[in-house]
Length: 376
Length: 233
Image (cartoon, rainbow over all chains, first blue to last red):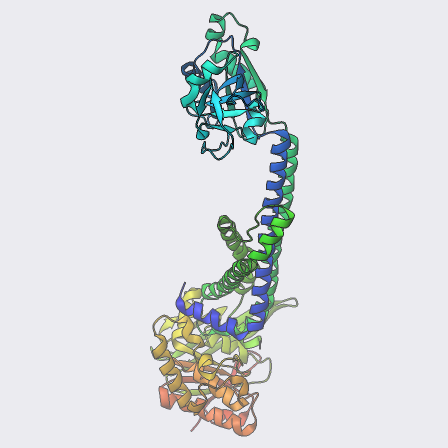
């Protein structure tokens, strides 16, 4: 694009400052509304998702509990579970040793009573966990009368509790001591996170029974007695509803941008009408059709880029006010302009230039240089 | 009629267009030669075909019959872009209604054709614009907005724009139509002095027989046909 044409377009824009300012203001307002709707959509859905997870479990999470009578090892599990999940390549798995009833209090305390203890083994990745850093408990704990450090134990997180039940998580280094302290046989469990809303209970059950069929037969068990699969996620219908809300917000947000692009197209048609004589004169003075087309497109590009830039600047200025609003209404941080919106804005710019300049360009392409004699 | 490489030659030129009422012959069988560095006035009544002659002469349109040669080159086979290049490099235009952007300064208006040429830097173009404004007698108005100028000054700016790149041909369509008698005379003097000052071929369409008589040659058009061709003594 020639510098001369950019300069000429700028000269024309400077010549009608008010029109330009109003158009830039229109684009900035539209983009700002898009930012607000996108962020409100995100905040509202995050709020709903958290509520759904809190009440109805994590999306796509299943727990498979193995009977204490089923004689399998961690080596068996880490070899056979991935094979059972080969149809779910993005699945994440946590391997957990569950000790049903353990007293972890140091004598003579007895307030806690018996607790369920979970020991997460290698490659545990299905759940968001917390580090064992000693900050989660404020009392002394013992196993078999031996005091254990505070960074070896913590209460389960909400996610873990919903998947496995209440209890404490113990560091794997204390597994041997745990085995001595346990009064009941421990059992294995796996937590599978498919991160998919659809229900795959039937498929997962069959895959696990098939993968462990030899071991089940070896121990003289029936599949249903050896492995018990539970779908923890009960909120798929509600999630679909929240997805619907997000879709509605997105449609409204994109319709705002489409309206902005159409408004630019209409405004540009008026601008073109005023400039037709000048374009005719330019054609008569030697401008090619493509030169005039470029001027029209540059005009639209200029308006859109300035409008988007103004919207970003305004969103940064109004950020603190929106942050406060978000914290008070949604209990979440609202950030008006997020960097991940940039690709969407780029898409808007491309389509905006297309929609905004299509009809004006078609109009100037029909311009006859001889019109310069008749147009003014 | 032999084709000289310094002349513009119309050979059996005709131009027709369609209307709802049918085909209209705006120009018919016109044979003309415009030698280099001469001035010609074109006179005729409204609707006689003068404006059609201007659009053809200024290479804005191609004739529907016959051929036009510009300095030895026929335009029949030129593409739209090639016609644009011809207008850009060799033809200047002056209009009755000035066709100036009122919020631009004189220099900015004169520079408009420069934005569509690639062979001059801005500095060179500004120097040429200032020289053109000097030639038309208003160098001191270079930075004044055209909206603050009189009709005569505006037409001088328009002439300066037309001669910015020293065209071989300047076509003026009723350049004095919006001016008073005295200013019209001054503007005509400037235009008709261009063959002497710059070696330009000037073709001026006018209603005014007095102004037409100032040109070296006067041609008359009626109902799309050439009906008179007088060379001043």
